[in-house]
Length: 295
Image (cartoon, rainbow, N blue to C red; front, side, top):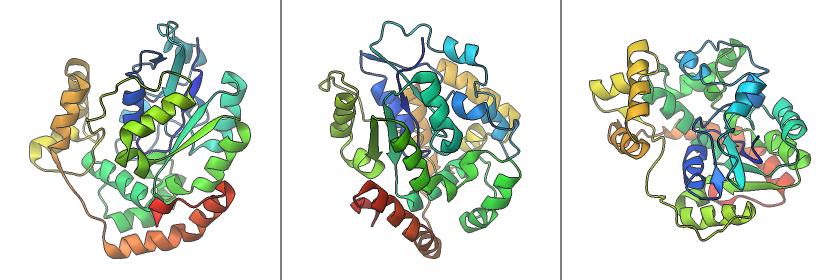
């Protein structure tokens, strides 16, 4: 038993929320492990060297038999899904291997304004006490960090260079759904219903979409900073216990109240707008339409 559709990314674009929304449909099953990362991890050099990367590495499934075991209890579902947001980032080898192993299955890609996506990834790493630099310093350090084998989440700019990423999947698969995160956020119910239609399951199933998932920002107090930290073995262990004993909706509500909003500086925003201007145009030209929400 293997998945017959994938959420292939991108990171910090709503893949976690979509995973939990689709999982509520009676015809769709997902493994409890949201991000097996099998098709990417088998090609990567472990362990990654960034702060806290090892706490993420340990969930990666690098053995095909272990990957198959994730889905063995899901045979009663019409559709079986998997959601690993780094598949689109590592498109140069994941797209072909996914098709070779799973066939020409439906693929869901979620894209977000790459300027906002970059800052969201930064806030996520700040929340987890992994990022110690300012946003601009992190942008400047990106190339060196990746060369030193840091995890893909540190690719603030690279994670939003969508043209070749999207092209690999559109040319490799015949049934690809591109979801724009800004529309997904504003019209969540309609977007989820549209994805159900894409997957050919009942689109009228009622889904709870009120919970905010993976909210990022700066911890508001020392306790929150300790519990959210991935750069501390003790707090990481406590988090694992909490995840196993406390329902996800409760954890998400508590976490969302434990971080404060962070704002991008105007000069950093302009730097990224300039950086992505031609890159976005190349994507729009390839798709044949402009994503107006990114203006």
